[in-house]
Image (tube, rainbow, N blue to C red):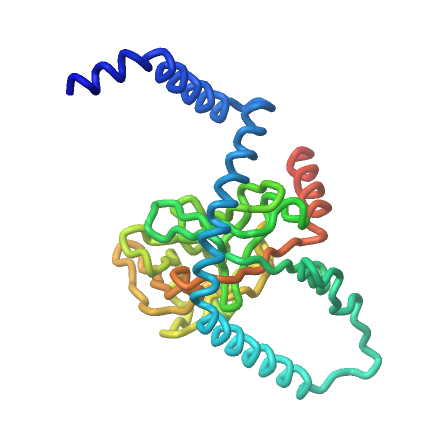
Length: 286
């Protein structure tokens, strides 16, 4: 104990210097200044690199599972394509924009009004009140705040922070996020995550006359600024009747397995800036 006290006394000035430096960095990071933003960006990049190395090791160990997952997704896409080809279409019908690869290095695909960029998950939390996913692409690859993120099976979240080469995504497994959703008959509502039961989502205040059955699919709507429409959110597991108002409450199983999330698609709505400007100007004109 005496030796420890002597060491503290000997290096007191140096220890005090480092403590004050840490306090200064914390204040700078919390301050909404240019220096604070730069510091946060640098910290995100450093943390992203650490996550990247950890992810590389997990990625190597999990190659067999990922191959199985990709094979299942390819089979699902092939089935979807075959179903589309079997439909009767008008020979004079013309698609406004074709499906094509724009950059094979970034894996960017454009279809209609959306761009899809593939990304690998390098960190993922599932046990917090607000959960986040870190992905290995950032502003250098065209990712920006507010872009939606989906998986091969369903909805994931939206981008909240971006550095040059990494991005963090606020998961729909978050108390902060409500998702505009619809039933198969077109009835609209909102889904939210149940913090007390992390593996389920809740959809409240559905009309009593709505015909809802177990395993019905719940999709995103076109009302959202964040997500493309018709992305699977989850399926109905249970239906309850609220005795106070007679409306139905749905318990949903999420379509995305967040505990096994490895690859995602970052979705850019090309027309969203125009739509948002119009809606903002309309709101101001009222």
